Length: 281
Image: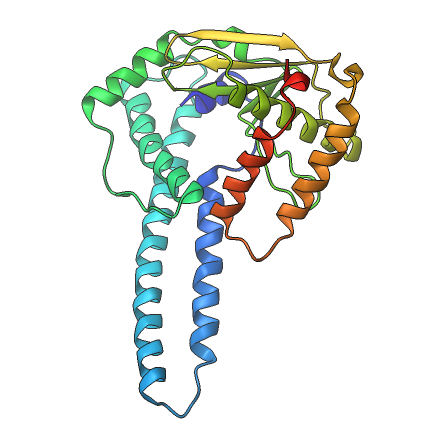
């Protein structure tokens, strides 16, 4: 919802693809792989072939059903967002409520993308959760988050390595955190530090990409925005050596076809946590 409200407040914002759209693309590729496997079954059937065909058909039916649910969720979100963005002033309560319901289902697609567990895609936000989200939105410092040069879910991909952040506002890279913690933990620092190196590499490859001079975290539960300057990081002893190592490891991880996406995500987190803490201070 924060992304959508920022998009309404700044119609010129550059909005990257939703995670749910990546999930749909993955699901289409999964269907294509299953169909290809079915086509390569031998013409002469034996007991094992019949068993493989049975499981392939079941898999295709299951993937197809999930694909239909994902399409429905995305279509619902597209329609609700289009209506929401048509209002320059605060949208009517029912329009905002419709988008909130769509956003609740859309968030479930993030779980599919980041883990092999499939949540109940048909379940909607309960009333208590919806009211709590509205409370968090009311305390959000919109003027501090919504800059003139605003990028939502900016793509930090460099070569084969895929990554995106929450937003970049006037050169400040921000992560949105909804957890109970309201402090800059080591895990949070190294995540931002890794994003900074990806942003620097992205800018080297694309001069239109903004230079990151600040980073920060918005702790939504507490309505607290923490930012700090980072334009001095390049002068920290050992920074460039760490940056070269990190980008090299990230590139190798991205091209490793022997790992699943979830294994790569776990490895990426391990990679970030292995960064020297001194460079993140």
